Length: 199
Image 1 (cartoon, rainbow, N blue to C red):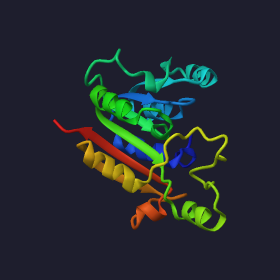
Image 2 (image 1 turned 120 degrees about the vertical axis):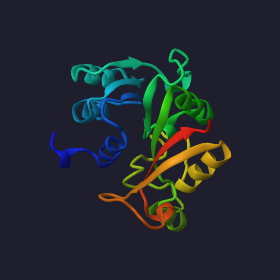
Image 3 (image 1 turned 45 degrees about the horizontal axis):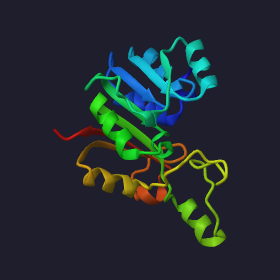
């Protein structure tokens, strides 16, 4: 796989992870990220995924993946079992955000979170002018088929971390093809955060 073929969010996550780390990917899909981390960072990865067909694709890549619902918890994992826990494009799909994040911060020394920014200007314009649920590059689903249960913005997540006393170590904002430096809550399609638990 060529570097330019790797999704930008996967490149960012790979850049945040130290070589030879242990990684747990919650909602790992078909395993593209775990495969990249194993190849590029010599990471020892494990995934959890609910979709059986996606798991078959992970296994075909030689990845270790368990079938499970993230919302059911990570009770089988000890504290600090992994260097990193990844919730990329899955946090907005869980039912119980508090419980899932609390578990992720317990199991991982650091947690990487990526989610679509629901307050992107295109979303705002569609709601204002059309009065309809927005569909954008980061939110490609119609309201009746979306897997998203929570509609959060970058500002919402930053406020959430402050209220829950979660350390934000890095903030990275992405547009369609590049990073966003200014007005991320308005311009960024995706917010990515490296967080840790306050001791």
